[in-house]
Length: 171
Figure 1: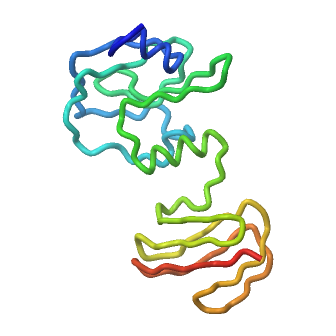
Figure 2 (figure 1 turned 180 degrees about the horizontal axis):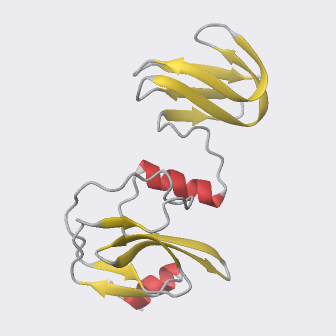
């Protein structure tokens, strides 16, 4: 199959689809709000209509979000793995949910900018408040901003102001 068709979409994702000339974005409905894929997603701002739009019609798919009665976010187990489909643009919240569902380690749920490797972790606060950083395994931590050493733990708590950046060395 070629082009923008339900057959091409099925080849790509494993789902069966219906193609719509246009899908308006006024009425998103959470069907499974506690599912890991959508648990962080707060809904969507009004967007331009999807032209074309594809909705899932697969009876083997787990429906997560509807738009005007059509399934627009879904999960499906296939022989080759699990597929997640979203007509909705991938916001940070939606991607965080997909990563969580796939078993990817999430250092934080706060939406702050975070970069980490085996030896260092940097967090930049996009909002003021307590930041809880979950480490993949217990580590001692040296706060390079303050010089404070924290004992080995699998989490670090920081009180941060908006715009503040903290760099931690993982010991």
